[in-house]
Image 1 (cartoon, rainbow, N blue to C red):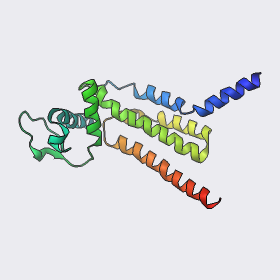
Image 2 (image 1 turned 180 degrees about the horizontal axis):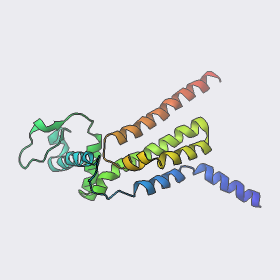
Image 3 (image 1 turned 90 degrees about the vertical axis):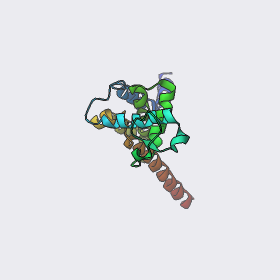
Image 4 (image 1 turned 45 degrees about the vertical axis):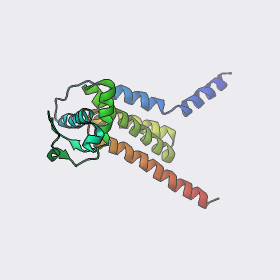
Amino acid sequence: MPTKLLFYASSVFNRHIFLIPLIASLIVLSINLNKPFIGHHDFMGAFEGMKARNYLKYGFWQLKFGQITRNFNGSVKYSSLDTHYLPLLPVLISLSFAIFGVVEWAERLIPALFSILGILAFLAVVERIWGRRTALISSIFYIFNPMFIYFGSLPAPDIPVLAMYLISFYFLCDFFWSCRRARYR
């Protein structure tokens, strides 16, 4: 009877291994979620928040998804367009602002979700290449890395890019693995 219980516990653990990094990253990223934008890199939060607030104020179609970086009381002057980054992050932050209001934690929520998505993609890649135990250990090291703790919920365009890079890398590896399996059938 105890061996059956141990076998069941280990199979549940193996099926739900992603919960450990998920819960750990939720705890780590929720530490400074409501911190005001006062700090070395927090100008990015104010910058992205201004773009998102202008999306709420003027609408996506009126701005033509252009990222306005200043506050205007009248008509929009298109001389203040920011063209350095794609509008994905400000658009998602503006949707978060529409749901939760214009507050710091609503702005930090979107990068935190992308960070968690990146953790899960990293876990999937490492599990596929080196196994579950290595995936769990490496994802815990990834989560408790000071750079992840500091930049994980920072509203900067780099966070969604990293998560999408890891997801793309997983699908690229999956494509190569499926080609290799098809070749040896």
